[in-house]
Amino acid sequence: MGEASSRKIGSTLKVPSVQELVKQQIAVPLRYIRDDIEMPMTSSILPQVPVIDMEKLLAIQRLHFACIDWGFFRVDV
Image (tube, rainbow, N blue to C red; front, side, top):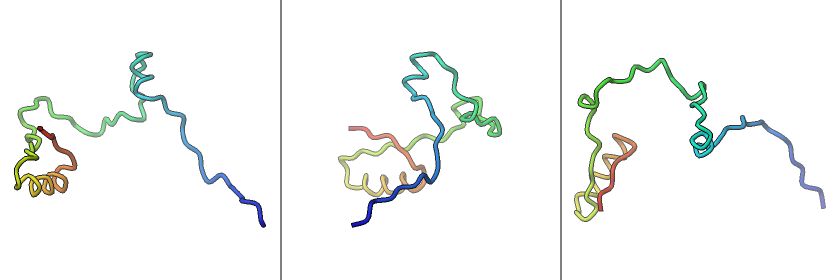
């Protein structure tokens, strides 16, 4: 039987974990900061995150639309 061969396809950057950044009070690495996006100054102009009551039958439909339209949502139980 032949031996299993392995090859190195690529490499990854060594990245500190979020816990390590907080523990050592390290600043967010510049490669993660996007200065090309203008952030709004007030939260009042931001749309409200959809809230889905999972106990109601229509919540399944709202969950579907929240996933498609927003990609995230808040769950209240």
